[in-house]
Structure formats: C-alpha cells, structure tokens
Amino acid sequence: MTSPSTAAVSVIIPAHNEAAVIERCLRSLQAAARRRPVQIVVVCNGCSDDTAAIARRVAPDALVVDSPVPSKHAALNLGDEIADHFPRCYVDADVVVSSGAIDLVADMLTGGDVVAAAPRPLFDLSRSNRGARLFLELWQHAPYFTQDLVGSGFYALSEGGRRRFDSFPPVIADDYFVASSFGPGERRGVDGCTFTPLLPVSLRGLVDIHIRHYAAHSELASWLSAVTQDAPDVRLDPPTDGSWLRPFVRRPSWWPNVVVYLVVKVLARVGGVYKHRYGKMTWNRDQAGRDSIGPQ
Image 1 (cartoon, helix red, strand yellow):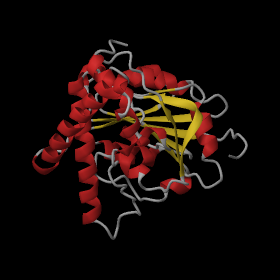
Image 2 (cartoon, helix red, strand yellow):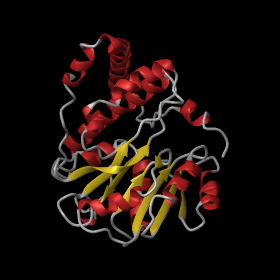
Image 3 (cartoon, helix red, strand yellow):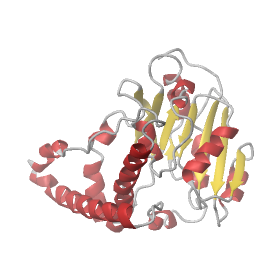
Image 4 (spheres, helix red, strand yellow):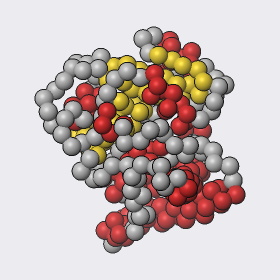
C-alpha cells in the first residue's frame, strides 16, 4: 500500500425507496473519511417515498438526483456520469460504514496491483430472530465472506478497475459482476474497517434474499452467454462445493445451524431457478428488516 493520500473520492449510492435507512448510511459515510474530501452522489431511482428529501436534509452537500427509472444498474451508470473522482465507491443505501473506512479503502487502491477493494463485512445479528441467527451465525464463515470479498453492499474501484467495463450491465447482480471481473490478486478486503449490511430479521426474509442471489447468478450467466464477444473478462466462479461446512458438521453444537442453513439454501435454490425461468427478475429484499429500523 502506498502512503496515505488526501485526494478526493466519489461515493455513488443507488437508492430505491430507502427512506427507512438512507439517513444512517449517509451519516456513517460523513464520518468515513477524515483526511480527504468525499463527493456523495445519491441516485434516487423510481422512488415513491421521501428518500430524496431525507438525503438532501442529512447531506446538504451531496448531489441528489431523481430518476424515474426504478433500476439499480441504470442508477449506477447515471451516478458514474455525474461523479468526478477516483477511487470510486459504490455503496448500498442500507449499509453502515465504519469511521475512516473511505480513507483506508482509497489508500488500498492508490497504486499497486489492487484495483477493487472493500471494507470487511460485519454481521450485526441483534435484530434477527432465533431462526435467522442460526443461519447467519454459520453463513458468515462461508468463503464468500472470509476471503477478499468485494461486493454485497460496498465495493470500490480505482480508475483502472472501472475501465474494465463500459457500463454496468442490465442485471441485478452488480456486486457479483464486479467481484467476478477481477482476479484474486486484484481485489482485496481491507483490514481495519468494516461495513455492516442490513441483515434479514426472519427466515422468510433470508429465503427471499437468497432466492434473489440464485436467480441473479443465473441471470448474469445468461447475459454473459448472450453477449460473450462484447462482455468484459468476467470469471464466474463455480458454486461453493460446501467443503467449508465440514468442520461445523463434525461439531454437534453447530448442528442446528447446519440444518437451518441447508433448508434455507435448498428452498432458495428451488425458488431462484423458478424465478429466473418463469418469474420477473425483481429486487427481492427483506422489507420487514427495513420497517423495523423505525422512523429517522
């Protein structure tokens, strides 16, 4: 890593009906950089609530744009057109970023071979019920989270990294598209900082979210096969073979977690296949989790 810099960073937040969570995200971002200016671009896309008004109140210096199109990939591309600086962070409206995270992530992307980076994910299980906690306690040990995660709510790209592709594709799995666009030596989880995603509060919410994950992976694979010649070099990793579960299966204290994990995964896989083949590719999310945040 090179020496710390004070160069500006742009942060793009695509936000669709995020009135319940946008304030806490913005306040965390305002404390996420201590020694560099941060340009925040909030792209409200197809909102029917007060997301834009809350964003303007909480972050008066931010660029808040209203788009009538309810599309995350369109919002990301619009944000890219507006943003001025690199490194560039892409942040979901429902995450909370630790203090100083922008500085550390931007430092990682300044020089060297790393062109995609993110803070380490931090799971807050305090709001989830017993069933959801059993799943999440185990899931956070999956290789997707313990290795160099870039995605799932926060990822940042250097200028060279962003040049790998012309625009975000018309798929809902933008984070997986980005993470798979870079080799292991090019992406890095940054120690010393975290981002906290909004986790489902119930098993029903977990199944809904994982249906989206499976369907989104299938959608991305289909898109790539249709545009192979024009697509960037995206490395679609094979599905996890489950070998990481073996140490937990050997320990009886983890058996309830393993059972719940496998049930959720099976239900989500079946639902994801059905959704991709016969349903409309929409952005499933745990609305109950958002509603439980309360008014801001």
